Length: 236
Image 1: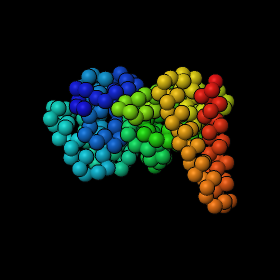
Image 2: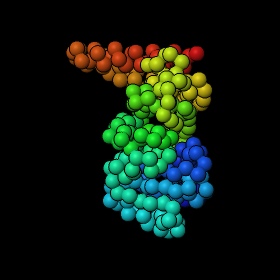
Image 3: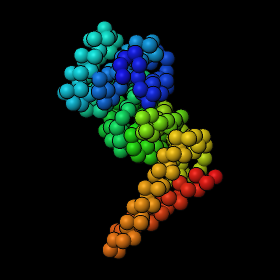
Image 4: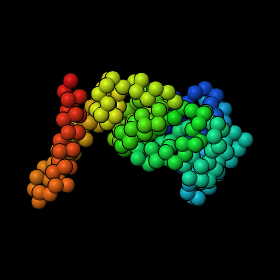
């Protein structure tokens, strides 16, 4: 991966950046995404945010090597601390857990007052992000699920607005599976949820062998409920 060619996952993230947007890429690692977006003329400028010193220095080196020091600024800081309110009109956060992404958005809510577009790619637990978006009045305007190198990735795109505009009413199920993804039901979606369902069933089988406790029974009920929700969608 380099600034000329991104992974399929990151290229999909970039495809949702509005033309000529000022972007902030949080947890930017080597700053490949912001360099690529600026280099291709998709973004007009970018901030690459990194909380860890090593990746921050790698990102700075990458930006210098690409000759983009005027357009891409690398900043060291935690989450949205690296930007000022209104400074960017699009934020990308890719390659972290959904719970962590939701906590970054929550901690940096004061930086989101101008309602930038959010493009979020969790590695796990996209549900945590959907829940945060609903609770904080962000409209989920699009989703994608794709497979790359035997891994399945979800990408969520949100803008400030009616948080339930694209949900049909089966809120719990749609928060787990994704309202757009449920409707599209592509190959990657079916593969992901077949795998998840199988894993949950294995966990349930192991629980049957364990000593019964109230907490265990609660967990079993919760798992069964999730399996039933997923299987309803898979068998439609």
